[in-house]
Image (cartoon, chains in turn purple, orange):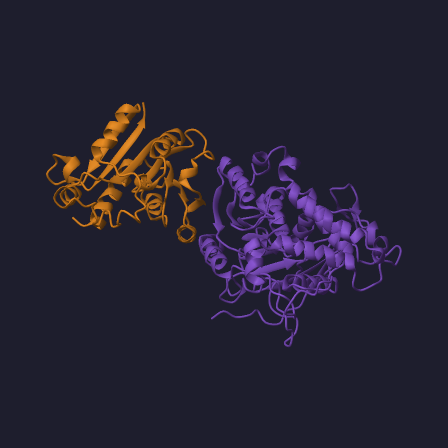
Length: 376
Length: 196
C-alpha cells in the first residue's frame, strides 16, 4: 500500500563561510552559502542507497510528505517518493535540496547580506546550473556519501542531472534525466525572456527592491510559464472554451473564459510563494545551460561519464521536446555508455513529469531494480 | 509443431550463431527476452530498439538497455559496424521498407540475423490454393484488413534477394523434419548474413 513519508522538516546546511567561498562560473564568489534540504528514509551501512532529487524552476527541497500533520499540501513530487512508491523510502535514502539562487531556504537574491544587513536583490551574482550542482555536491560530501545511486529530476532539475554526469561522474552509479535538454532552445530562451521582461517592467518591482507582496509582473511571468508547461490537447480537455461564471460573453475585458481564470489564479497564487528576483536568476541559469557549448561537443561532454542512464521524455512536451532528449541519448550511445530511453505517450505537455505517475513509477522502479547489485 | 516450439528452436539456433562477448543490437526487441538470454548464455553486450512503451518498461526491469525508436525511421543514429550482430526477429514483414532496413543492418552490424514467417509454408499455400483465401493461422493470425504484416515473403524470395543484393548467406536454419523442400515445409526462415 502506498504511503506518505509523513511529517518532515527542512534542514539547513551552511558552508563556504569567510574566508572560504563557493566559486561561481561568472568569476564571482559566494560566501557564506546555505542549502535548505530534506531527507527521507535511512542511509544504509554501505552508504549505497542514496538518491538525489533535483527540483525544477519553482520547486524546493520539500519534495515529499507534509510539514505538519494538518498541512493540506504535500511535497511537489510526493507521488513518486514514499514507502512502496517509485523511490521507495523503505529501501532508499532520498535527498532533495533547494538550489542556490532559489527562495526556499537556500542562499539566493532574497537572502540577507551580512555586510549590508539587506537582501542581495540584484546584487546577487548570476548563477549557472553548474554552480547549483557544485553546491549540491558539497552537501553530498557533508553527508559522507561517496556515490549517489542515482540523481533524478525533470526540466531545470534534469539539467542539473546532466550537469552531475559531466561534473562529477565518479560520484554516480546512475542518472535519470526527465523532460529535459542539454541546452535550452531559442524558443525556451525566448519564453524565459518574455517572462523576465514582465517582471522587469513592473514598476512595483522597483529594480529588485520591491516590498509589495503580489507583483503583477511575476504573476504574468507565471501565466506565460504555465502555458508552456501544458499542451494544446491538455488545455482543450481541461478548459475547452468554457465560460467562467457566465452564460454569454461579457463584451468587455473582464474574465470570460475558464482558461483565463485558471491562469489568473495560478499567477496570483505564485506571487505569494515565490521571489520575483529568484525567478530572474533561475530562468537565466536555464538560458545559459549548454553542455555542448561548455565542452566543445556533447560527445566530448559525456566522454568520461561512464554510468548507467535512463532518459525519459514526453510526447506532447513542446518546451523540452523529445528530440532534445534523443540528442543526449545519441551522445551517450556514441560514447558506448549504458543508456535506455523512453518517450512516454502523454497529453500533459511538459508538466507530464509531475502527472504521469503510473508509467514513471513502472519505469523507475524497474530501473532501480536493475541497480540492486550495487545497493546490496 | 506449435508456433511456440518453432520460435523456441529458432531462439536456440540464434544463441548458437552469436559469438560470445559480441555486441548485439536487437531491432524490435520486445520485452528484451532474447537479449537477456544472450547476456546470460553468451555474455554479450546487448542493446534493444523498441517502439512500444510497455515493452520498454519490461526491458528496463529486465536490465536490458533499450532505446525507443521506430525502425521505419532508419538507423541513422548508429555508426558503421558499431555492432557485431544486428538482429531482426520475426519483424521483417512488418517494416515499411525491408530492403533499406536490411542494408542498414549490414552497415551497422558486421553480420545480421534475420528470421521471418515463411509465406510459402504448405499450410498457407493450401488455404490460398484450395479456398482462395489469405492465410489466417498461428503464424499469420490476422485478417487481411488489420494485419501488421505488410511485406509477406518466402524463404526462396529472401535467398533471391540476398543473391541480387550482394549479401552472403553464412547460415540458414529451417524447422523441417524432412530436410528437403524447406520453402514448402518450414514455417519460418532464419538466416545469418553478411555483406559481400
